[in-house]
Image (cartoon, rainbow, N blue to C red; front, side, top):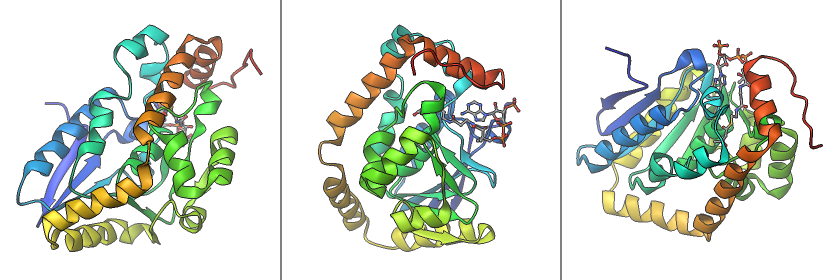
Length: 258
Ligand code: CAA
């Protein structure tokens, strides 16, 4: 039997979900997100679970959406499957709190997945970035909307336009993460925080989460859709083909439209 793409484990009232594609730095394929969404839905409905922790490996929480899978897609391919909708978007409907425990790279869709969680606890080696521009596209899973809300317009523009990564200390200063801990403390810190949440009254936990999200998201539904459609549109460009091909062939891209 193939190893699961997402490993799950229950610790008391906390569910621990671990992305399990270490060789590809936990690149997020539709299958990974499908498994993740299915597991989260089960825990969301399980009255013995009060909170969840989502983590990756020591080297990568997730290095982004799966570039190899996207490389050959056309505009019609991404539009017709509503890529980054479906299971991806369903994660925001999970009602119980989810803490992202991030070590190593959280890039592109990986950074967006961490931001989609309710808060982020980072290991000292964590690095956050939205490097899609280097592939000839833009973030497509909420990055251009959630990042400025989390870290300010200035830092979001800097990261989205230059592809610069932020280390854990800068991410904490900027408000992207709630705590930074030594790598060996990461999982315990996140599990302990989740256990505290899971010890609270579930209705108030769920309402608290909904209310904070109301303050934070505003018209996010519209803006995320706007972003996704633009992300889709970029699959009609030569530069997307070049950017993704260059990544896969391990060379520098030569963009036509500079
Ligand atoms: N998709 C597919 N495969 C990926 C991947 C990704 N996003 N990121 C890494 N991998 C794979 C590599 O291809 C490599 O596979 P092979 O061993 O088979 O060659 C393996 O993971 C290890 O990666 P590297 O050899 O590149 O490791 P490194 O330590 O030299 O570099 C890195 C690490 C800087 C994170 C580099 O892997 C990298 O830049 N990854 C891509 C990051 C990126 O561009 N993310 C955005 C993706 S687009 C997106 O996410 C769209 C969206 O908004 C949803």
